[in-house]
Length: 109
Length: 118
Image: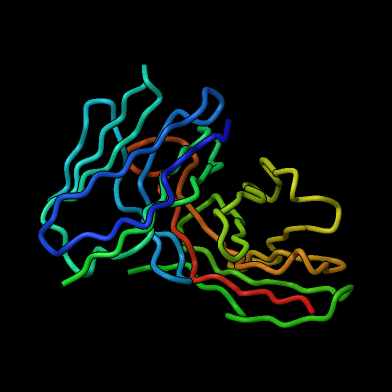
């Protein structure tokens, strides 16, 4: 089983839609989790950290379920500028980030 | 806003040649990392570096690879004898800390160096 696994997509949604991404991780992967965003041929940028209690940042909500080894990202009222690849990432607590394959999102007018 | 910088943005080299990729981490950061991303694939960890020593390295980081912090600002990745399969985007990153502590472990990535081995 891959350490961090994501549905690669692409997800094609209209502006204003709500879209959800899921990610699963293996036991050995990580203690901390993040969602990063990567635009085409650019560097990954941190979108938000993920906590078991769930956390929200504007239109973005992230959730971690340790029992199911499952991480989610919800984007509400999607904008054209949300089009990117969303990377589910684990951290082994020593600084090594473990990336998923990424889920591609395309928001259309 | 402080940022990680990398040079060159694109490096083309012949197979078997040595390349050095350069990075300037954020100035108050103490932990440095190299990752690579082969076109169409996921970002992969190569190595982490702290206090002038390698903290952790992946299986990819074999004897052909080395890292150095030659002065107070630069952090370099050297590939001694490049192979075709080394062609990838190489990202440098830095953080205040590797430990989760109020976001101090957030890794900031540079824009990358695209390495093409012919």
